[in-house]
Image 1 (cartoon, helix red, strand yellow):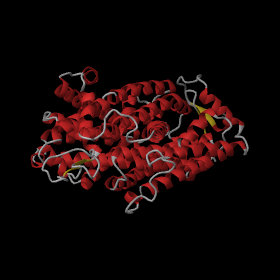
Image 2 (spheres, rainbow, N blue to C red):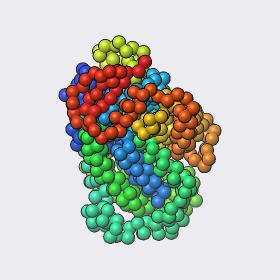
Image 3 (cartoon, rainbow, N blue to C red):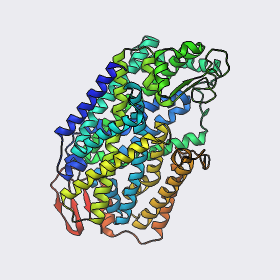
Length: 581
């Protein structure tokens, strides 16, 4: 066990728990939206940590390493989606106010049925997403602390749940800001360190341009019959690349736990500002991930290819990662020498590794200092826990606020609502732990599935709710049900081996799309059904059309006192709300 890993992991966990104790809350407004008092810079860091997750820290560079040029589509899809979210969604929903996405959908479509279906979609998205985060937690703790994966997930998720129960969104926001600091520091340090190690240049992006390492990697792969690294459409077809990118983009703009973050700032202008800060914070990692991917793969091939099998198996980092079951070295042809001709994930290869260990193993492969290894472990854990924090509060809000309070118990006291919210966090944590122990794929793959579910369910009614005054409750509900049902059915069929225990998936593709992009078809169905049904059913009430117009207008984003108005609406800094029956 790396002593630095133990110190940094345990130390950061204690910091997160301390923040929860200091930020404990007893008011629903503090619990759900941090009292709308979070500064834009802090919220930007929290948004970045909430959104990037273990998929960005642990899996993104691994995907680009394994897939080469085609892997960059995950980077483009996720970052492009954030721009869509920042420009077309976040400012308008913050101006509207309230607590959650189902809140907006329920009020905008004047229907508790729409609210309930949106809350259900939030649960499906969040549970799928959190499975990927918990897999990341398990990998980090099992490798760097020698903890059993199951025990590690239970302990880590128990801490996350405790933070949510004690401090709600207020504690989670400040915790995520700290977690962002940890993860970005770790990621940048390891990228700079390996850049120095391989090129002598401390500026990774500049090193990639001024050195020929990308060309050397591509030629090295060609020499060992692994395929050129920088050739496009080698792993995915053009149709798949387009579908994955678009699914990730619109899925990002429908993520409930990320959109909720923009409710925590004082005004719509702060929402726009925090979106800008978040984009900067995200860019720090995303501009470094492709560079780290190239450096890491080059270093890995240089270290292992052509090395005697017995010698490779005696390398300390190989021994440690082999113990986790995420790295396997076999002498397939019996010549006693490693030949990496089949890639790194094919079972026919003499070196088979999980894409999720590329980033985490890089400091050890490069022979970096133990403190860097420990820092990367703490960063990976911070990335996973930060998103798990947000997902638990999103699920809690969907059940306690949107279902229990808004639909079934509108006379519930604040104390009752908070009790239900905290119980839901604990229940969601138990379900999340199970999914983390039995995930339907590697981290980025599971996260991509969650994005697909969000794209097929929540994104269309949010976008149409802001920009289409004619959209009514009948259209929104029909579209939500069709998009969500189709995507869930396809995902289950495509992951039947992992989810249902089958020997293999029942369906592998639909119209040429795999599980990480089939949500695009669900989104198209959602849009088509919603628009069609809304045009053949009665128009929404005039007051709804007025609400939509006011949300879109730039006026009224300044902070003013909340006052009641006729028709059940109220304003708060230009925000409008309407209680549904």
